[in-house]
Length: 361
Image (cartoon, rainbow, N blue to C red; front, side):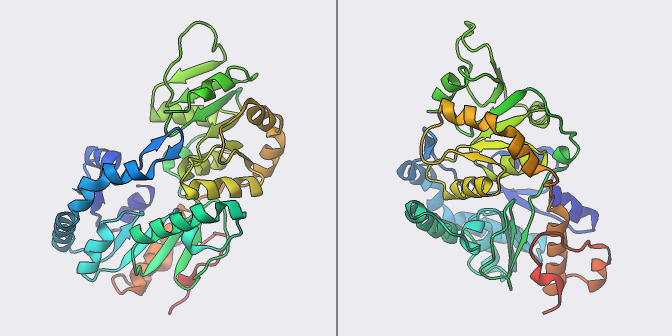
């Protein structure tokens, strides 16, 4: 939405295609939105369950022809010139039927489109994840636009652009402060109850989201449990001294933008999160606990090193919104649906890697 609002301000017409919570939010905003089922992962005890994930999505997958037919009609009626897909399985297939150009815009394809070294114990998980991403991602996009807080070399720089994270305006509007509390968020708390017992033994005030409240008997005096609330969550993020969370890209990016050190515990079976965690540690922005449960020593050691992480984070706050918008605008010119004169007000890329679309083909 951060990028789409800017595109609309530049005169572009937009049609959204999504499902799940995204559909509810966009429909509430009054956006023109086509519903498409969202594929979901099933997790238990912080680990993806592959067989149950296939079972959960099976009814959606068998409706594949019907979904593609509906999207094809919607895109044709709208008169779309370009499909921008954020790692969604159905829209690129509908675009292929109409011979529409597709821009693949996400973070997940950092796994497949960049070069990096891995310890051998991650090779199998990485191979499975690469195969899954290649199955879902567009087969022949006109360009791949990656958003990331780390910047490994590109495999195909002639057709790929890497920009800093997309930061929503609500986060950019925050004024970060270093408070006393640690923000704790697990994207799936089933099987993570042990984290509560670990944190109650740590000398730190913690605010927990997405956890069930334990008995209110004074045993958890240093822990505060809060119901989901976007505004409250962002306020607690901005005023925290550190963050403990799973290794999803959005929260990591927003925490780093606000200068918050992170202790991350990737969901097992999601290699993208493992890669995020590895680079977070390599960059010195925090610590990671990979392929095992969190321990009290992990938390204590992390908190003891907060000053070092904070020093590393000074001046790191980067935003890729303008770079992403510039890439999209140049791509529209490149495929012949916009005039080069529209680039006059487009800012030059500021990402650590050059944008291959900056010069004509």
